[in-house]
Image 1 (cartoon, rainbow, N blue to C red):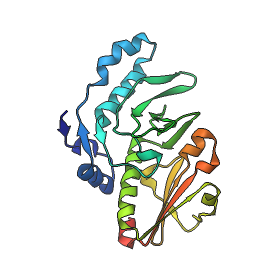
Image 2 (image 1 turned 90 degrees about the vertical axis):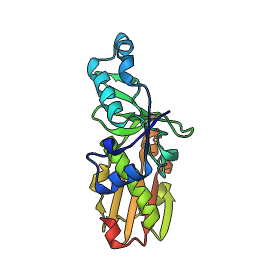
Image 3 (image 1 turned 135 degrees about the horizontal axis):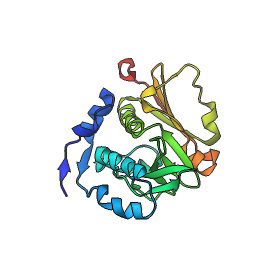
Length: 215
């Protein structure tokens, strides 16, 4: 196995996320998905969908990041895989193997969304960049915060966000980040949407963060 620098995947990320990827990520060598093109075409998968997987894999394939605080750490490493779906329903393809035994797969959606698929499809972020930004933010917030509080289920409804503004760079969908005062708040609803189970909602509240670190 060969290891590669991660500078080539950092384009388009914020300075915080670029630093996180370069300092804490590694990239491992692996076979290109282009070798499977003819096999996938024979299965009836549209060429345009195979192109999407190829582009994703060339940009992100083999990237290993530190664990995320939710989804049992996220993918073990990013890697494009066989598309699933139809023209009517839209096509998804694998985003990377699970790091641990979780009851869903990490997928890329029809519009490039990064999400989880179990009983249903739950897009977490509008792009894989949003996922990387969220993992970087969680890593830094854990380092900066004096206190971290976890709430779950119905307790998430009591987390007041009126005085907070969204952290736009995470491109949140089911999962969002918020900043305000001396705090950062992450709200994770992907598992809840994936299994129609509101008790699976989680919020992490990071408090006691120096104001310079919030931006």
